[in-house]
Image (cartoon, rainbow, N blue to C red):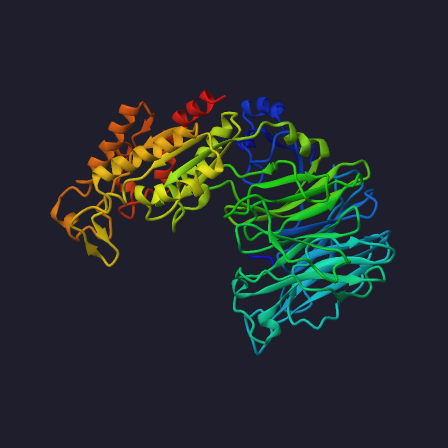
Length: 607
């Protein structure tokens, strides 16, 4: 279902082949006045060679699938403007690529996308999802078919596309190269929509409820029949766009996309005819498909978007025990953050993997820039590069413990704009291997925080904890709005709770950084209710809570970042509190900048 590091300073285009080379050798070129990297170039890991496919095609190129049978020739198929399917090939492990060749166009309205390819010697079979526009259900996702085109001469000529027979009204998710089993048997992942089957088609992709599985062919891809369904009942879109791989003993391993922060995983012992109950993955991967590939030596490579909220960063990992354990993920590409809080690109997703005969691993993905320009990129990797993470030290874990200011995400603030994400990126730019975990909950105060300290903080075994509460403790109004005569947590209890939090963290050997609460502004929706209406200063009470944090920090010799002063002492500080109680994009940037040095010192002190 195709829903419509700081290392960019080491990039350049080379040799007229659109090969992107990333490395320190480029710095002198930039210093000599070369152009800065484009949005599509920025963020690729240092040292990787990346090629942009689809050169010469106008408009958007998206959703690639790589396919090969012996690694000598690798093919990549993708869609162009969702109106046609194209193919390119490489004979030198992705160093250079042929010109794009058109495989099929749009047989009839509405659109065609999600190309896939089965390679069987010189016989190539390309599949694509054709979403039809039914006159009696305009604009709804009522009917789709898999269009199939065949080349018997290695892609020099193509048959007229024909729809694959199916008893499903709406099929989708066929975006990963089929997997060969024994003899002439091959399996291919796909999904189908339940509402469309019930003749109650959704008006948007978000309204779909999908089941996944495999199509099974016993005649080398000429005819297909469905295996059993995989269902993820508790998530809105269900189970979509399965990635599959064959394991050493013949079992199949599957990862399905869900609308949960994590994809789900399952296994089949009988070639896809039945599946074990799916379980959430240990990795993130919100609403985005993964890719799997069995390498020549039997190891399994995996690529995915390692985020609970976004389609980046794109990472890879390796398993040598049939997908039971994985190497720590290694980032292939992650967008740069611009000064205004925007990204150099907004997604790097729909990965596909293939291995060349010489052992090179190719990773292709769909990338979209800020101006919604879609491109397909392909990187050359090695197993050794992926596995280097085995020798890396475990990252230092930092927990940001607080309320909705810490949680950060809200209308107008994306996850990548929160101080948690920005702080993590800044620390990593300093060469520190860290992981910053968000343990902020909206509406929380110190009394509630104490109750969840074990579950949300201590259980994670962090080295450093950033503690920031107060705005809800000092609140003088409840939902309704209903004016209060006393704050939700008295100042004395606030002091006691903070001290108790510090005691428990320090007794566990955790280094603590206190933060004063951020201030409120006159944009608060309840500014004319109760005590807020009676005082000219919205922060008449919150100032005392901020001062309590300073005093506790000084008495206990705990470092403190004064976020309250950070905002009230800036001429534009309170204007950054746009809804009266939360910092927005620029505010989170300021918080991350203020936290950087103190957190860095605590991390280094623990080494």
